[in-house]
Image (cartoon, rainbow, N blue to C red; front, side, top):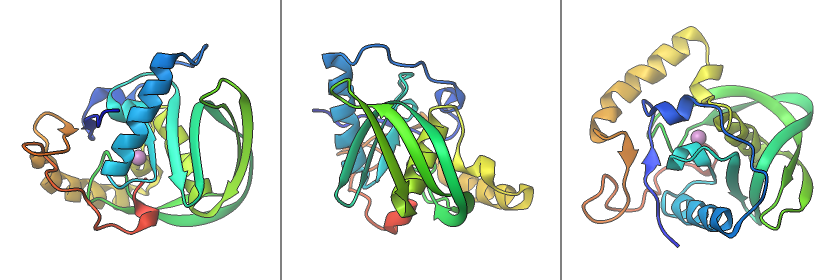
Length: 189
Ligand code: NI
């Protein structure tokens, strides 16, 4: 297991399309395990492969009792609307209210290579939408109005100087020497 650096806004990979996974190999299971460990250290509830510099269509999510490793996840049904204040491990200390579907049904392949389907609402539903966005080069700031986006990006301008190499590095000597726990659960996606 390893804690991986997390890419931040400005890293080109966050804006790239991912590549569907054809076979869930041991190497990819290890990547997913490393992503889970990284997500825990970063005190997040979701993490997508581009956030650790990888192009596989893979994300991990942990909300309360639900722990999911999802390869090739796609939203197959939506219902209702909900507003949710979101943040992102790749845009630290920057938040905005996003208009999401209230409930989604997601199909994916799990870490054993088996097809799964999940229907979720609340934080889990929002988190799934946020992570699947990441897998298509999309960030929560893209959902904001022009004015709100401008204000959020102004906040980020002050933050980004902490990450000259466009990565968050955890542990002694890194950009995040102490685990971050200051944010509300719903914002750590
Ligand atoms: Ni995010």
